[in-house]
Amino acid sequence: MAARVTITDVKLIIDLDSTITDASIQVFIDQANLFVNANLGDSGLSEDILTEIERNIAAHFLHALDPRAKQEKAGEVAVTYAGNFGTGLSATTYGQTAIMMDTTGKLAAISSRKRAATIGVVDYSVEP
Image (cartoon, rainbow, N blue to C red; front, side, top):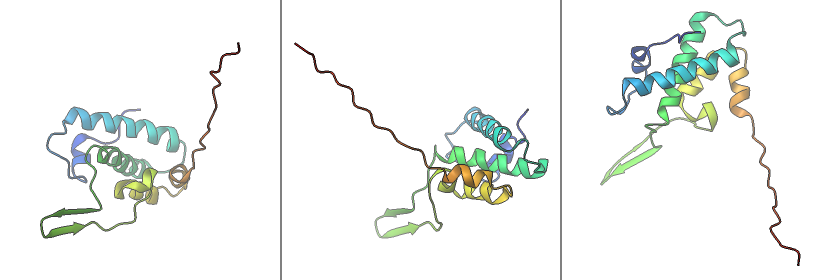
């Protein structure tokens, strides 16, 4: 399925570093489209809601290119950004908006999913 949003749609909600090209933005829109289709395509949510979720997920993905610090300081001037940021989609306001718009709860479940880590041991000893 073709992307629901355009480069202009995404630029309307996110303040991007001016060096990020439209081609790069399109890559993240395409990724967001795949993600939304795979996880919410059969959810019963309206196309309007899926469009807004897709826009926010594209912005969330783009935010990784230009992350905003929780606090910045230059000399005597300091700015602290408000918000409660976690991991996954909860790491940005855009991801949080997508989660909030998804009334099925699928995005919240995906974002809070814990990934199990495994540790293996490789024995490189040589028997005489």
